[in-house]
Length: 379
Image (cartoon, rainbow, N blue to C red; front, side, top):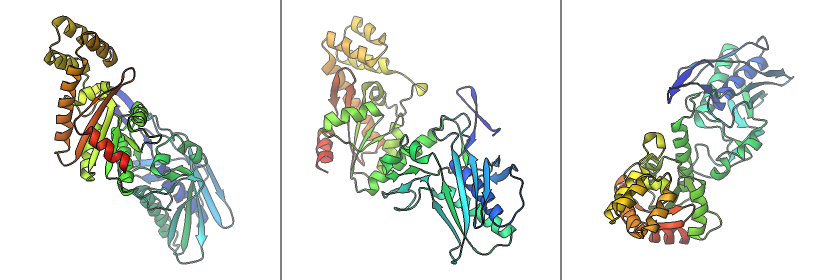
């Protein structure tokens, strides 16, 4: 696909979604089944919801007595997409009953088992936009070839069951395969919006399951720490990556009663200064922030110079310990962290935060964290 975006001064090639693959494969399979004469290697032309015209090449087409199938290999462009290179297949067959166009999932396409997702429980995990794309393409073929009967469209992904183990699907309650995704039909490399959408989806699931209190952590370290902090073997924590602000915004929008935010000091020291996207490309003032709080705690100029020169927050904690001002400094940090997270949710959600480090473990918590811990453990 010859479409590009520029990110961080790099030219990156776009790709196309599993939804685009499924829609194009369904179009070709339906056309073959209904009698169209098409060369095996002729491109399938598809206009995506974003208005981009794709020309997708079928990798394999087959025609049986009562069915036809088409396979298309996904191209994610320069995006590090786990589904890059997989085959997305559509098998179309005629239905005797008057059912219209029925779309279902076959091997390697997940099944939804929890509420809160875009698809109902028991349905194949083919999201609404890809489902609409498939329907539109098959209807278009039926109109062109003057077919008024019913069709069954089965989407499958031969590698889907294995790939799904390395996605969020098991956490979301989608079993036995991947989801057929894509709202624009196009994959933009390293799309932040795609990550945010995934975070929101997981929060939707928690809400639909009846959770009133939410646990949020940037990543795996936080989840590991939470098991010790909460005293549980399994934690239903939502990983928000660097998108702390977006996660808190959505928690407020979903009207959760409370949120417990747990993170490494290297992340949350930024949030204590109101930085709600903690990726270093948006700003990295960890040592400046920590040094300012140490100054408020009475650190000497020599200690402040050592702090500002630290490379990691773990090193900085060592300096604070040597100067015997760790408690005072972190108390100051936690007070500002408490202020900024409460402001972010407009005081509409009870919220607390817990700080930890990989080397030192638990470092402290804001004033409401203990109560939230109790509410989460009793849920």
